[in-house]
Image (cartoon, rainbow, N blue to C red; front, side, top):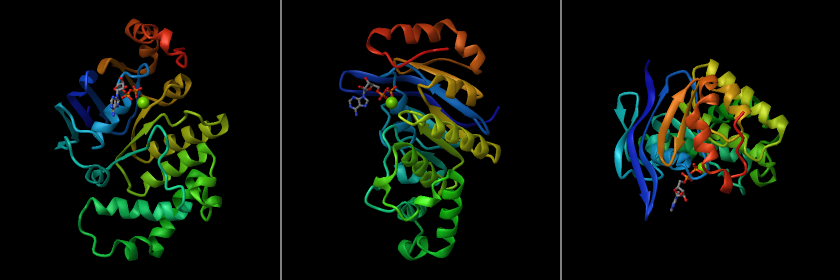
Length: 259
Ligand SMILES: Nc1ncnc2c1ncn2[C@@H]1O[C@H](COP(=O)(O)OP(=O)(O)O)[C@@H](O)[C@H]1O
Ligand SMILES: [Mg+2]
């Protein structure tokens, strides 16, 4: 097994809160990996430390053989790790196409060798590629519309399109199905599958268990900032530690169902 992405005993605390406590996970190249766990178990924080939005207190992050611990977000993005946010981050006052042009600039910026990003990134090749990606995600009809006019699900598709402009080796999705209607959820799942068949690796945080179990090859469970178990969906579904992790927080967490 080749791990494309690996965290080795990563720790992170905020004041008195130990958000990550020696979290070790591996994502195999070519796989669709899932990361699940109760609210507050550290899933978003793990994404943040992998993608450079937070620094680690201890431990390391590797992309293939490359140690990328505490690399800045731009570097991580152009090194091949794309990520979307639990609450979408698109440029709402820019059009969908303009968002895609920013994505192209963003992808090249981290490489630090761009003389005139606006001229290059906004060129015909970039627009062609952006149009292809927007066709792929099904929102090309909105290319000229301000991003703020998109539905929440469409914004998630724009975020995915944005990330794909960088041709990432791996894409981290933080709750791609959260707050999205059923039709768009199945569109998102189909697109993930197609991208995966063409070679993109995924790591997906999601509470929708049908989505996770239907899509992922391997699922890791995070509890109190530690990866407690990892395995194929069928095994994870019935693992007592998984049930413990969820049942242990059942009182303050009503949006999770395992099954
Ligand atoms: N920037 C922050 N400042 C303070 N506490 C934080 C911050 N980010 C996360 N936390 C805390 O870290 C823990 C893990 O949060 P998070 O990674 O968002 O969990 P999850 O995504 O699994 O719901 C929670 O207790 C959360 O309140
Ligand atoms: Mg989260």
